[in-house]
Image 1 (cartoon, helix red, strand yellow):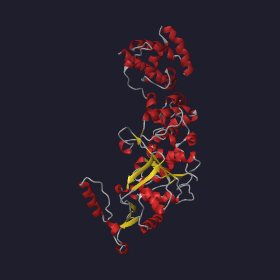
Image 2: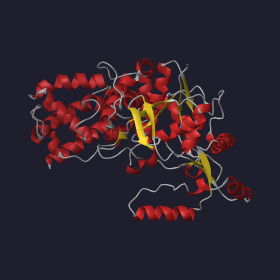
Image 3: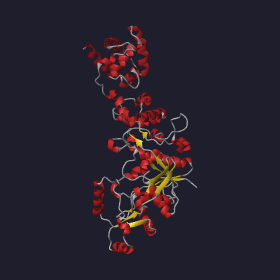
Length: 482
């Protein structure tokens, strides 16, 4: 039997990171078994659909490198792959369940249900539909249908016994049928509910393995009752523990947690994100942490999935991203960094190629670049206390001595290249009686205003050019003299 898995997002906006992990694990499971990976859009909840969200799903999947074998925009033998386009498929199956006694028509008004819900709340109980319409005669049901009364179709859950299923991560899960509600299968608008559409679509599309979050563990027994009612073999279930922002709460856009799209926009590399997400709740064998998608496809297995929730650690993601940044071919880094340089620096004013060479090993995330290079565009205000450096044996007094000594010599350097700056200054230092650090630390601070910069005094002076370097030096000397 060929493995067939599906990722079935709702078009309600961005692809959140928990959803991305589900998609990734679903994809990796299919690939590691030589199976098919399918994309299905579950848009039965029309009220929550966000315009443009379907296209966003396509672009996010493409950006993540999760290539599906079948889907709305690539076709396949089991389409359509958008639920609303399959609308006519669901009602006949629901009617089949009505005929076999596993479902029934319900004509209860919103008012009656609201009242029953309020009464349950008053008693401190969970609301459960009371099977009121199950007891209507066939003739009464037909009369109401002929009269055009609005209706839903509800699942007829047994009032006693157990409902259960086997999960490949959590083992056998079982609940008392008496705790389950007769949930709606077909809504008043004729569209199926999420749960019912899932069962019909998974069966008719030949899905063999269903991967989803543990929030669906409690509803899975209901799914299995439907499979049993139809006489179908259920798929194998893989329930994944949640991705948490911290020990208290799940990741959520509401709290400002980023989506996959947000991370890409901030300058995280998709390869780093995918590598990081893969290890959120799954452990490979051995010590290796850096994996390409192709490597993950070969080694992914369910044994490595942890039952405990995974914590999304932003610092760990930054570490992954920095590792991937360093490994980028230089031309690719330059292409990606250029727009971020332009946010802080005037076009054509600086040697961006040289700046990129200095920046690549220091860049953790591309969004950090503007702040890291902004000192080149404008000299920042800084506290003269940063001239003090114990290891370099320097302080503001020594800094003033060093800067006043080197200033006239710098003016003579021609051509103004990094190499010339290096050679001339290094040759000059011994004549001042100062150590290398006592000259170079103050010089870099004086022209950058920063304790930390991409590159040292010579690289910064080269990037700034002669005129700006000397101007900044004069200003810094004047401040120290005050």
